[in-house]
View 1 (cartoon, rainbow, N blue to C red):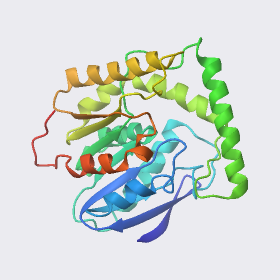
View 2: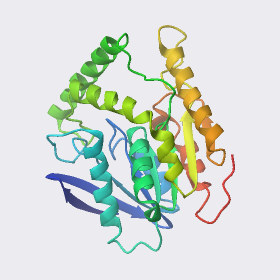
View 3: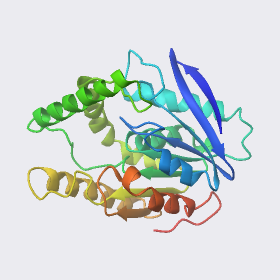
View 4: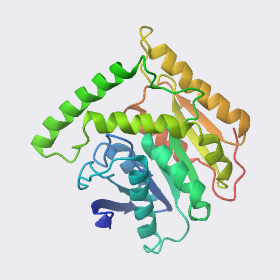
Length: 268
């Protein structure tokens, strides 16, 4: 395995490369790091040349003064530009989890000739209505402030899983994502490579109480909407919550391994 850094927008991004086979770039999601995804990465390296990295403010990446969607997209673009200098034998498959899925879709829609395929894991979902309404705002604010407090404890311990974003940073980013989701179908129309979706059946958990059932229904409705318009997209549903990359790594690796290549005919 090789480790190196990419310098972009005043941020130092740690990049790891290992394995052999078809080139693949893995983009983590919000509040997830290379260290968190170690099991999935190890499985993918058995038959892929895997490049992965930490987003700004995550893991071993440096902190930044901006945590907007555009700033994170710039991090992915910087890593992809560096990959172009790594003498890869072909364009890589781009895999994104959660926020990373949205970043991967936006990147591929802007630079379609640099990506051989997309695998989007529990993200990039064109849901038909916002997740964060005025009614739900206090709930999300409290949830992410609590998450940020736990992450601050991990920072004190200096782990490779640390995240420096505040609760407000996370809330602002998710509000921005809600707006961006209204235009996701336009992004999908610009992508020319095969696309595979790997989605959780219970994104918000399996509780039948509170707002969880509503969020899960909204999540399913977004993908149903996408497949109606883009029926060539291959979709796999796993009986899991949003932490599926941690709980179902072998299944996800198998689906990625079987994802259609650039010359294959995708199936649904």
